[in-house]
Image (cartoon, rainbow, N blue to C red; front, side, top):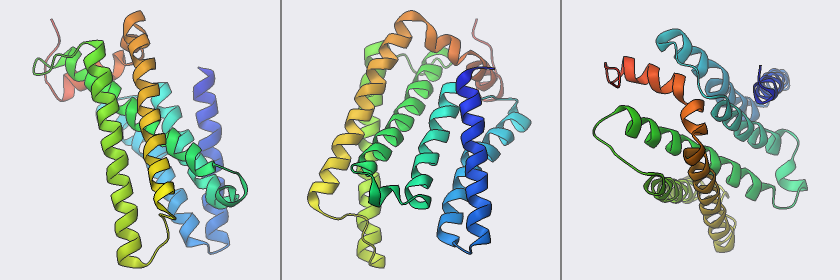
Amino acid sequence: MKPGTVVSYILKAIIVIFFISAIWRNNWIIAFGCFAGIMFTILLPIALKLKFNITLPWILDLMITVAFFIHICGDVLYAYDTIPSYDNITHFVSACVVALVVLIAVYILSEYWGGLQADKYGTAFVVIITTVAMGVVWEFREWSADALFGMQTQLSLEDTMTDLLVNALGGVFIAIVGIRLLKNGALKEMTKDLGERIDTHIFNKKKP
């Protein structure tokens, strides 16, 4: 078992503990956040495995788990209030997760589906642009929540612009890493099982 997989299991177990603790203390806001983490880090991978026999690449599973874990810790341990720039850290990690999902999706589509052909630099460009776009969508969601429900998720223009910058940096970071993974063939090895399963269940064919 890869070390990253072990770390992922440990973090998932802690999220479950946080969830039980939040219910015990009737803290339903934190309980909801923990449940969302359990849904995406535990239940969704299980469903994909049972329904399609798909196992997520370990690095993607780890990154998703880390993203939810640090967000949850921000509330449970009050890290947003006590650790400087903690919000920037969570935004960067979340952006990296989005960028990694896009990287894997574009690679698999290019590798197994004849409707898309993208070289490593084209893939990197799509990763960056999509990550930036998703960051903008997220900021609009926060703005809408503040306007409609009186929340205070966007503290200032500087806070919003910093979030967008950090999101872009996350996209650029994964794009650079992705180019290297494409060059040395590591991405192909990491996504082989996932790609073949998607090829079978969605595209209903095998690449010749």
